[in-house]
Image (cartoon, rainbow, N blue to C red; front, side, top):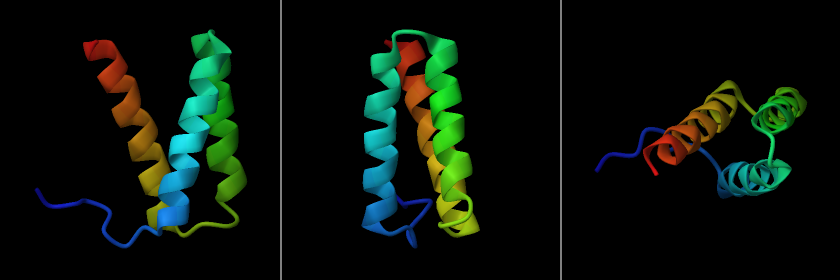
Length: 69
C-alpha cells in the first residue's frame, strides 16, 4: 500500500493521534469537533501545508472508521 503522506514527520503523526485520543474523551461530538478544529488551527502556524492536510485527513479518516463500527 502506498502512503499518501510520506513526507510527514513522526511528530505530526503523534500529534494527530494524541489529539484524536483527547477529542474522543469529550463524549460530545460537537465539542470533539471543535477541539480538533482548534488543534488544526493552532498548528497552521507551525506545520507545513502538507502536515495540516495530514491532520485533516487523519481526523476525517478516524471519524469514518467510527461510523463503520
